[in-house]
Image (cartoon, rainbow, N blue to C red; front, side, top):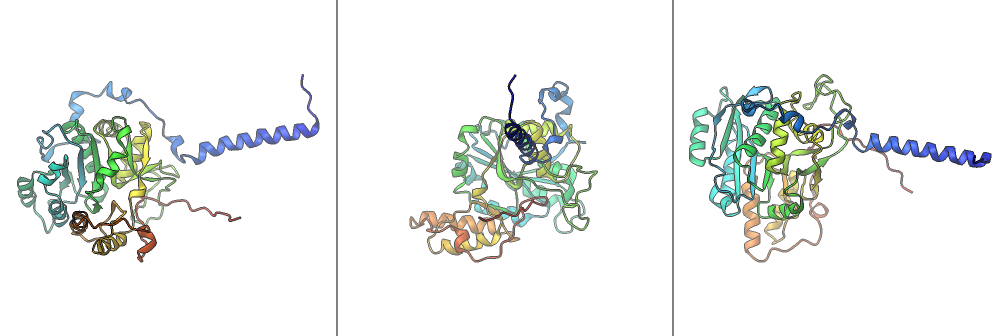
Length: 370
């Protein structure tokens, strides 16, 4: 039997204590809240997934008020865009179509569909107007549920369900909001970084860690403990814009039917569901800005033949921003004078920084400077 001196015993106890504390730290700090989410195999659900349940959308029976089953009849589709859009956001959809028509999207191997719900009480847009819009452009998918902020999860899952059902051969599925601006000419740069994982399960977007549910009733994002009990959300990506593929979309939309409904759609889909499925999440936040003023700076710099190092950002309430931004990008690129900027945009643009990518509170920690 090995005998230790008192000094050695003290050192041994310290080593054991430090090791235990390190293990506790790793399990509690890496993914806060995830201990309540038990990873599962989708097989335990699909074994009892009957044919009739293909029309199930969470706790609803899904019926498409408007559909386009032929949208993906061409097998050579690089990316399918699922754009969540409010019923009455006609101008925003028009801006996106003006920037990139269906014909132009086809040249890039892209497809775009706007996800809508029903809004019979809307004062400015009628269902007949939406039908006319769909007949003209053939790019609207409308579900049989009511437009409401707390119904966004239905719309989000409906899009993933549609993609896996009617567009299973698309290489990528891109979910985005209609108030998000995307540099369409640089999108392939982002997609090229995902080639090695394109055929696996994955989600790539603006990764959000350690977000806390907001418990203040006056806040727009107020969440009760009955709605979500944990002190932290699992790691998720912003619903503004993220990339996945049809096989991942199918698993997420299938599992959604068996989970408790949660109204914050990106937390529910890319956080709660993806964690249960052990879906890898990749951070591509370097292509994003959360500040719409930076896009305004880019518009000015394009006229100086300076390229923009932002690929995704908010329109800041400017419904025509998607068109204006991509028009400037195109002119800059076609001029053959478009220069890479010497400094990053956030080092040269003077603007108020407004960040609103998340759906909760982040943790801010003090850092001691030596």
